[in-house]
Length: 413
Image (tube, rainbow, N blue to C red; front, side, top):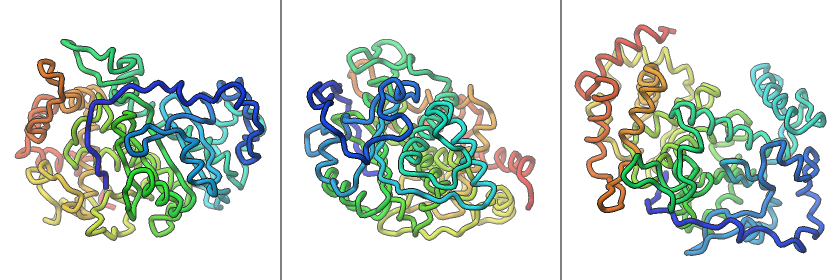
C-alpha cells in the first residue's frame, strides 16, 4: 500500500507560507468560517490549534507546496483545514447523521463533550447531525488523542526530540531529524468525502494512482501523509466510527514509521499488527487491512477476534512466527494472518510500556554515527535480537509462549 522511500529530512521554514498582513484582511469564503471558533485567534489557541491555514502541505515535483496550491487545484471541493500541535489536516467530509445505536451515540457524545470544553457552548454533545466543522474538529481531536496515546506507549514527550536536523544528537541517543516523533515536519492527514477528490489530489501531487487509501513520504518536507475518501472501502467508511478506525490504523503506521525518523521499513508484522491493535482499542467492529493492489483481499466481516484466535490455535490454519518475522509484502498475508498479527502484538504489549519502549528503541532509529547515515542492515536479524533482549523470546519459542498466553486470556466464544 505504501510506496515510500526514505531520505534525510530537509528543514523547512514554515513562515514562507504565512499569509502577509494585507492578505489576511481579505474576506474569506463563507464555507471557511468556523461557527465554533469564529476564526478568532484566541479561540483557536484555546482549542489547541495553530491555524486554519495556509500552511505547507506536501510537495509537487521537487517543491514543497502550500495548502493554497492544493485549494487552487481542488477548488470545487471546498476544503477546510486545521493545523494542530502535531498534524495538518485537510477535510471535505459532509454532514453525517448520528445513527440510533447506543454504542455510536455514546461514543460521539463523549467526544463532543470534550470538544465543548475547548470550543464553547455552541457544541451540542447530543446533536444528531455532525456538521462539516464538527467533523473536522473531531478528526483533529482524534488524531491528537492517538498521538498522545502512542507517546505514552513509547514513554516519550515532544522535548525528547530535536527541534530540527541541525540539532540532532551525534555520539548520543539518536532521536531523529525533528520534533514530530523524529520527523522534521507534522503528520499530514487528508480526509475527503469523495474518493474522486482524493484520487485527483493523489494523481496530480504524487503521481500515484490507487484504489485504496495511501500513505506517502514527502521526503523533502520531512512529512508522512495519509489520505482517504469516505465513499471508498465499499462504502463502509461512510460510518463515522469506521472512518475513525481507518485513520487510526494508517496514522499509527505512519507514526511508527516516523519514530526516530523514517529511514527504513520495519517488518510487515510489526507495522500491521500495531495498526490493528490501536484501531481495535477504539472499536473492534471496523477493521482495516493493508492490501496488495494486484491481489486485493476480500476479508470476512468477523470482528470478534479473541475467540477466533482460540479457534485458530486449535487448528493449523495460522502461520508460524518463524515465517511471519520474515514477511515483507502485504500480499503474503491472509485474513487469519491479520488476526494473528493483532493477537501477537496484544501478547507483546501485555508485558507493559517499559518493554515496548525498549523494543522500539532497539529496532527504530538505528544510526551509524561514523557515516551519518541510517543503519538498515539486516532488520529481521535486528528484530530477532531485540525480541530476545526485551522479551526473552525467539522465533522458535514465540508461538509456544503466545499460545499459552492466548488460551489464558482469550475466551472460547
